[in-house]
Length: 290
Image (tube, rainbow, N blue to C red; front, side, top):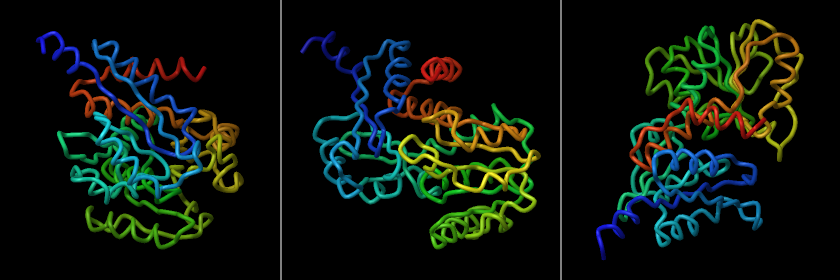
């Protein structure tokens, strides 16, 4: 094989996204366009469980197929971020601490799980809400994305984090894991969103409620107060009902696009070894959702 052929193959990357209801995902456009700017050919495939009526039980087959087909990497989204962990060969320290994986990198015959959700959320949060009061933060959702946001907001210095989830045991387990990892016992769990929001300075919305396939709001809009900031992780649609309600009463807000771009830039680095131009990716994202 010629040197030119080897070089061409080395500069071609096959990636994908595994999740449910992902047909409106902007990940293919973001990853492929950023790769183009770096002189790479990256093909990004959507692997949507909903299109075949499958659930997380299909993950094992999909991960095996990715190995066989020579994928360079995968993004993992709802509802697979925690279920994928037993199927991988190794985890990064961040993925292990968070207890969820959103990026899988193929390293030879090994699949290694990473998490760029936390760093991605931090990037977007600090960009959109640089003066946010972190005295008492409420997190809705203790799943994969919520776990990443919880880890990230404590790293940013949140004094108190109250975790609310419809599965009380899941919220309690996340709080316990965080308190084992961070000093000060700053995380608590409750099933009562009204009590959790009493005196809250900010709210992180990390449930799938508000997505195009799961419309609605995750809480009673009457619980919102103008003094609170709201960070939404859903980005399809970008203007969720929760954000609309929050903006009507004057809350400072961060839409889900910020986290999406931040985590995508982290994933690009893992897939290619190259630093993404995050400002360029964000501008591209905003053009796509106009």
